Image 1 (cartoon, rainbow, N blue to C red):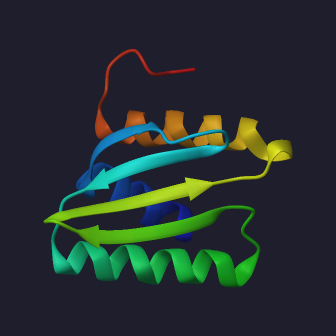
Image 2: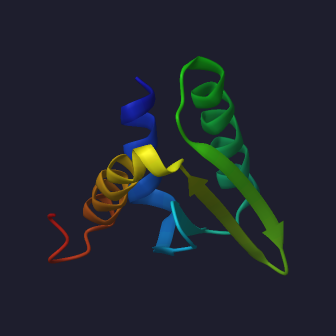
Length: 96
């Protein structure tokens, strides 16, 4: 159920995805209070269950950013997540 909720979030709210350092990606989100609340709720549920991801949600200077990180052993999972996000955004040529 969370997978579908994350996919919907990626398609509707992510405006940009980029690397943010080793084992981290940065998602620029539409800077809306309801998006921030939705992201916070989803990430709390994910980490409360069994997540190998770390999430940092930042709202500053009119921007909303979610950073997603993994440890070294799970970088391939992060790569797959990045491909999933870009596909949900409709970015061409991202099927890895």
